[in-house]
Length: 257
Image (cartoon, rainbow, N blue to C red):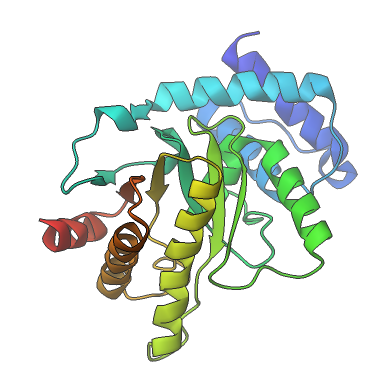
């Protein structure tokens, strides 16, 4: 199969799952097809799917990520001992683990083609990730508390694992409790990562997007939490602060030198 043939196969299979969408015309242009496929991934509930679908999906997603360009953590230069800043798409980073800024349902973003990191990670990992998260939450029996962490396989992403954490949502003046909860996100991820023998972990800017945590204060808390953890535990885990927006890159550069 060519990449176009894979994409069309996946679109047709996902449309077939949804009777109300079966009459949708598949676009001719490549980018429009990609947008439709991503939307269908995003809205799909966790449920059984065929091995044939998974095989084609996995081949398709791995090729899409490769075409975007994979960055190997091993090629990065630290800004301080065991600490890195990297600006780019976290779904293309090859490290042991990456961190997903999840919501309390832990099922990924259901908004078609939304720009949040939760959407990107679930899209390019594949439908297996949402299924794993759904099973994890079924066993837990309640929504995920803020400041904790869960770990899953990364499936089609270049990394090995995804750590999912729910950051605080800011709806007014920033409070001490919300700062403590954000720090807890970083500490929980680091502890869980090391329990799973993770040697390198990439943190996104937790809570700064849709959850409205002030960017600079969030970066300060992130760095303080990581350094405190490493000092207290003598951990040698290598930490990448992954930024996407230029404003966050400049903040981390200023804080880390």
